[in-house]
Image 1 (cartoon, helix red, strand yellow):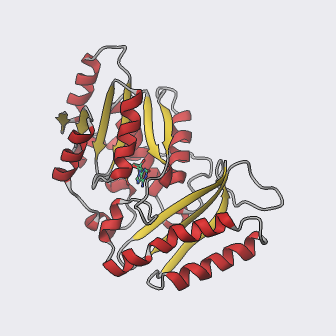
Image 2 (cartoon, protein in one colour):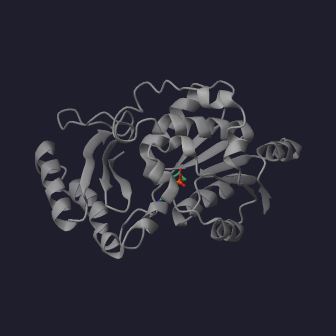
Image 3 (tube, helix red, strand yellow):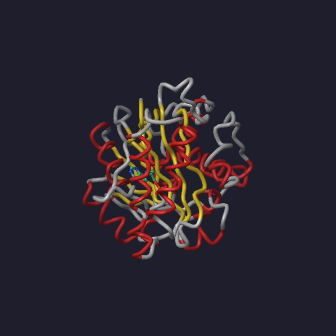
Amino acid sequence: MKIFTRSSLLTSWLNQQSKEASIGFVPTMGALHRGHLSLINASRKENDITVCSIFVNPTQFNDPADLDKYPRTPTEDLALLRAAGCEVVLLPAVEDIYSDPAIKERSYDLQGLDQPWEGAHRPGHFQGVCMVVHRLLEIVPAHSLYLGQKDWQQMLILRKMISQLPEITTKVVPCPIVREEDGLAMSSRNALLTPQERHQSIAIYQTLQWISAHIHDKPWDVLLAEARERLHVAAPLISAIEYLALVNGDTLAPASEKQPPACLLAITAVQFPSARLIDNIIIKD
Ligand code: AMP
């Protein structure tokens, strides 16, 4: 496994490889788990070279305390990537990624996709995500970009961003959510939960499954109100349910039962004292 800390050296190395070799790219913020590894596996099946980046991107954190406490486990990450057969890892410093001040001046018109849900609760987050992934795709001229459906809104936004950048021809490959045995969506932030919070966190996916199972049983506003109540009761340590909604999976607009969208998702974000978690379930696709 080749490890690069300087992005220019990675770009030169990739340019020296055969022009026929397909490149799959998996950007991450490290503290790797099976969810990340499923992306690596998907890329390895479809490409000659898989590149994984590990970079905790400061520009996508609207809360400095969140950036400070974000888990960092580089030694374990490299061992996991080696075992997974990942060919190339990029572990850059912040100064390397943002060496050119013009990169931080870039702004992206995401045609409203960045406004609701995560965008409303994390101002500036998606501009930071676009900034870093745009820069990473300049470093890694990938054929395919592997993104988890756990971050559904991020996946739609990055697809939109790429569609607006004529010089970038990378295809987005969505990958299903990998869960713990008890249903909790894997996340680097799960490591921050106290044992009690971790125990109650199973209620998040259970609530999404309950919504999916009862989607035809009652009006959706009633269904969502009951689901909120269930979640509060099952997980009293949750200090805020930031959103729990039924949305059109293509546009993120709130979904209504009068005109159900072709792709229907239930999405949620909850705040525990120790960590903020997000999850979603595809009800109809
Ligand atoms: P992160 O390190 O959290 O920025 O995530 C890096 C990539 O892994 C993103 O495309 C995420 O959507 C994806 N990912 C994170 N958790 C999971 C999961 N449980 N299942 C599948 N993909 C995931």
